[in-house]
Image (cartoon, rainbow, N blue to C red; front, top):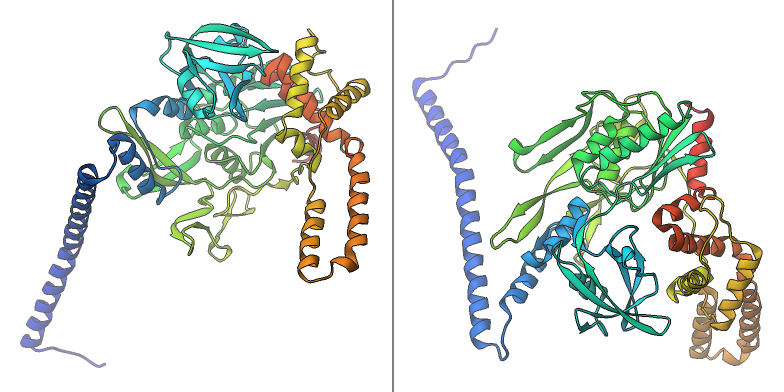
Amino acid sequence: MRCYCTCKHHTMRTLRHTLLAAALLAAAPLAAQNDRGFEIAKNLEIFSSVYKQLNQSYVDDVDPGKTIKVAIDAMLSSLDPYTNYYPESDIEDVKLQLLGEYGGVGSLIMQRGDSILISEPYQGLPADEAGLKPGDLILEVNGESTRGKTTADVSSAMRGQAGTSVTLKLERAGKVFEKTLTRREIKLPNVPYYGYVQGDYGYIKLDEFTTDAAKHVKDAFIKLRNDKPDMKGLILDLRGNGGGLMNEAVDIVNIWVPQGTLVVETKGKVASKNMKSFTRQQPVDTKLPLAVLIDNTSASASEIVSGALQDLDRAVVIGQRSFGKGLVQNILPMPYNSQMKVTVSKYYIPSGRCIQAIDYSHRDQQGRATRVPDSLKTAFKTKAGRTVYDGFGIEPDIEVEPDYMSNIAIALVQKMLVFDYATDYYRSHPSLPPAADFEVSDELYADFCRFLRERNLSYDTYTEHAIKELRKVADREKYSDAVEKQLEAMEEAMKRVKEDDLVKHRSEIADMLKAELLGRYYYDRGRIQGALKTDKVVLRAVEELKGKK
């Protein structure tokens, strides 16, 4: 056995070195903190000096509120798109984002050239009750012309505190009229529609995770189950749902999973504020087959619900890969009634994965945030042992390829021709068959085609664009004479092919027309109901629920 011993001098020297190292380590965080504090103070002083010099020396007057807001926005934009500053004048936007409510008249508007028009009044709200219709031109708001204004400008003018009035000058079919509306606290519905698909399968459409979203989903589910006790499955549609309040997401998961189940965990810079969110109530149903629909715009709270139910093997997720927003924001009060929404943590669903797809802390040479590389994606396991991955949103269990719009459909939307036809039709037809029964007949479609001929519909295809580019290249390379006849033949062939587009794409165009007309007569609820019979993602969900565990 070999023994080691040290002399007293060596031991004391080692002890002194150890104590010195410990002192340096203890001082390091304090020194770093002091350096950081100095850097903050220094740069704030520089910023203050820059603004003072601008105010004193710039050739024109400088608007302090506008200039500082631009500076704040630029600073926050270097972090992530979800960290935002809201002055007092924009607080209604914060209420709309978080609570789904705002003070206003309850109508969507859109821009057409220099004009602003009503695109959709919400059912039962001031604009609808005052008789405003899609297609009505908004000429003035409280005596101020809307000509040349943006939708944001006009929307801001129409919003205001509940109980106040706003006067609109409008034009419909060449007739000018005025309406004075009393603003209300507008609360948008979380669940615009629920019902049955193919008789035996419940369906709930959830648009937003604002206040009481979980209550509305739960109430809809209980109503569906009570109306049809032998319901064979449920479809929860989160497509197009950009998220909202995290607690609502947890409570929605709670409807179908046992009490005390971990749904989401948040982790941020301040460890004391990290938290785990568990289901708190007894569930409504833990056995009924469940399908959740997502697409590439399903984000945040939608991903918590779909991801948690996937991790817990409680639902089959169907559709397209979700957006990938795994960041959590808090609203912080700021001076003078302003507010700031700040990203404070990331969230992690039951398997332990974070679905954040974009790394805002790293940027490419153009300053753009980068996606999490495949090499850094980590495998996790669901409750039943299936493999899932982090870092790129929620990948559906069953992927359904999205439908891509044809060239003619894009043109119809861009030129607002479906919207215009529906406006004319609604003004001359007092009724439409119920949403569940309505279909675009051959006669109606023929009338729409006649309308398009009168409007001289024209549009370019990618093929035509490629032919034009080929002609430019041939001209540049001195091949024009040799290939001109072939190019002309291709152009003529494209003209003939496009003449058949209204026939070839009838199904797609008829669905667009059907949705627009149903929205006119039955609002958003009718539009959703009318689409269920041909929605291929919904139909795939029914197919999966019919016989598979």
